[in-house]
Image 1 (cartoon, rainbow, N blue to C red):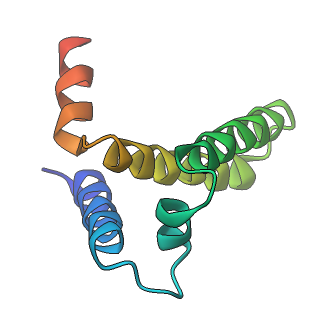
Image 2 (cartoon, helix red, strand yellow):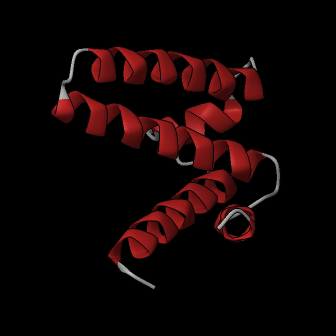
Length: 97
């Protein structure tokens, strides 16, 4: 596993911990407990996707990296909500090689 895998695995572990322990001051907790349920995360994914597209259109590399990270984070939260994990994502990507 390389450093990118480590970062994603570490982030997913934090997300899973937030889902289990629900600390009150956590943005991740707020996504798991939002009154809109998973729609809150789906809306964020839509919003972040739009921001990613605009950053790409504007050739703003810094913003593109930022929005990409936002998408990955919210995607991992969604996977966790659906009872999936990073290995499910890796398995699907591996099938596409």
